[in-house]
Length: 434
Ligand SMILES: [Zn+2]
Image 1 (cartoon, rainbow, N blue to C red):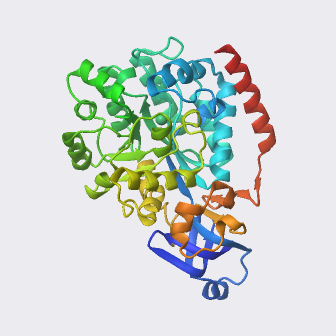
Image 2: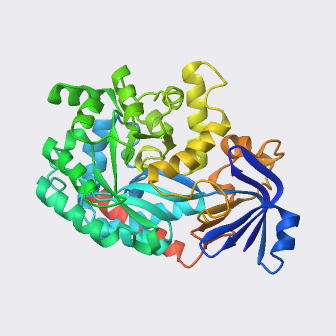
Image 3: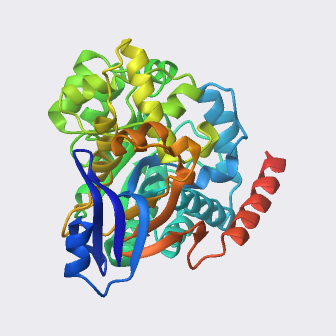
């Protein structure tokens, strides 16, 4: 296939009147349209206003999709323990499957081709199957909770780790490597030290497995961890082995100087979730400072109950605007930097090579956008357009690993209406029970 349009190959490389050639699951060439049409004359051609790398949602909760709107206007710990965890505890395998499918549909139709997905305690296999079938690229894992958790979700550490390892053996590397495993403890407050150390050991026993958890999201959480462990959250996570280049930490809003040094020294990846941080009034993460210290930062929508959308374009815009207003400096977090967080930064958070840019030899994760509305006219600077003006609704085409998953407003190969109906049915049933 040969995709034409203004190509944003990466935040620093824009090709006006460009093209991307896809061969199987890889990108065969990126360059000027005329030259590539000459070189590849027989390819099926598709034209868009903009062609860009698929975006990475580096911290999402697909299985919370059926909870969109169940817990607005609440603070984190109340939001979590009174609304979201009771919902997860009520979810059976079918509800988990429907919720994950709904989440992946939303991602694919709004330009996200890769997710780092924080699942739930039970029935996570249903979400793995959903990701395999719907075609999204995913780093995902079952959630571990072995302390101070609702009775329907708490497990002993041994059971939680054994279930994780079993899922890891079953799904890590599935779908030609499109699916990869992350060991996923919920957060320090819902896990014992033994469980967290067990997470590190489990990840180390298997090649290419990452660790994904929440950290330093909210002041109350940070104080509670300090009271329990006698040290700060990130120092504690570092002591038990949950820092390093194979670790993705969502949020990192409230960190002290030593914790920031630790993130930089250990090469830990941070996922910034600006909409969630604003909606839960968690605070403003010091993202410019992290980037200046050389810390890799990715972007995530977090879950539909705290956002309430998985649109990655919203997240890019919010990240930039929040960084500017925080510093009272409009030069902070410019569009190129933010697009880098949603692409190359996300690739690091997800632990996939050769994604996050359009380059020869990279995986063919590509999106095509249209710009045929008043809101999207004119386009002076395509990178600015993607970060400040575009919406997920502008995405006309989504390809993952060389397979077209969304085309001209329609999901390919799945009945999206049926999935939405099924998800709504489970959402209503569960909402009534909680
Ligand atoms: Zn989260």
